[in-house]
Image (tube, rainbow, N blue to C red; front, side, top):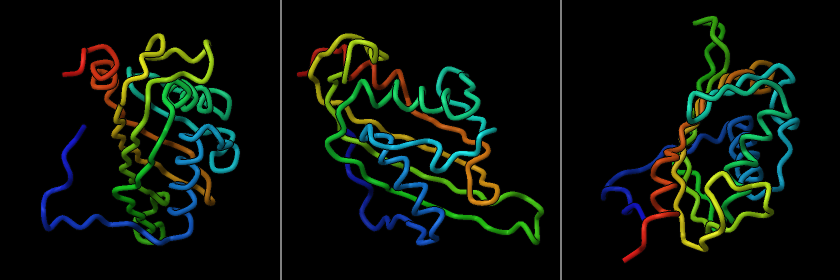
Length: 160
């Protein structure tokens, strides 16, 4: 498991309502309870590990299900949540950055959710970074970084 943040580090957690709603929605998806239609535009595009691109609600839901359907989340922590809203000055969409950590067990919810192989029961820590662009309060573009190699190592390598 990763060590705690360095002494003196203070993470930024935006209180903007859309940033908070997004973070809550990602946590709900991680818990297997969320609905992508609640925060994603119908035409949303997501780029995720392995240079995989998903379009629309079904494919994006499939990505989140593939990751967190294979892992039982015990604790989900938002470590950083930044909101940028400056369309009037830059002409760019509202943007946010989220860093999260999920402490999980490798225990797929059912046999169709085997992204990380058959159940090992091992403790697995997921650290993720997400950048998203929102238009009219809905995610239109999203980039997700989760280190799949690190997850596989936690699942497969014998623990000392």
